[in-house]
Image (cartoon, rainbow, N blue to C red; front, side, top):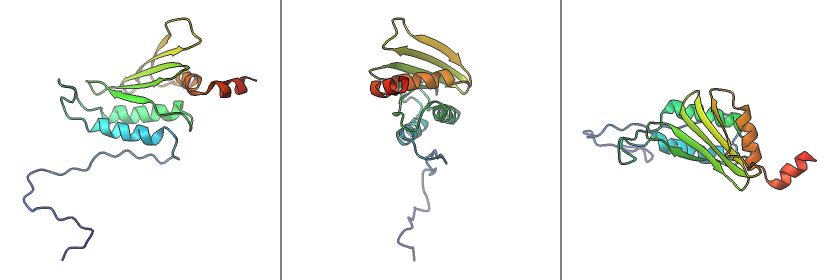
Length: 156
């Protein structure tokens, strides 16, 4: 007899069943974490050719590096970034707000191209090549995601 919560599979299954990749964090839940983790889990599962060509899934190494990076640059109440896969397993992590734009191209662990533009900046923006020091990016995230009222209060 089979227990009511047990699923019985045919003995001659034609396809190997593998567990879906799951990402877990032991720290408290931040505003950005749930949505970000869900999106990254989707990107790990992409099939070859997801882009209509030969695009591959985002690598687990890039996902873990990106999560570690986000934990360093985001406050608990930072809005989740938009995350877009690249065809070679890379990631584009982006915030586009009324205050400005920030784009982080995670090519691989310790190789990140960062571009930032603030609405009060008359230039074309600032670009950096980063490995593991994301302190400047943390400043940028704060600058574009903090509400103008909060920024004025902090400056006072």
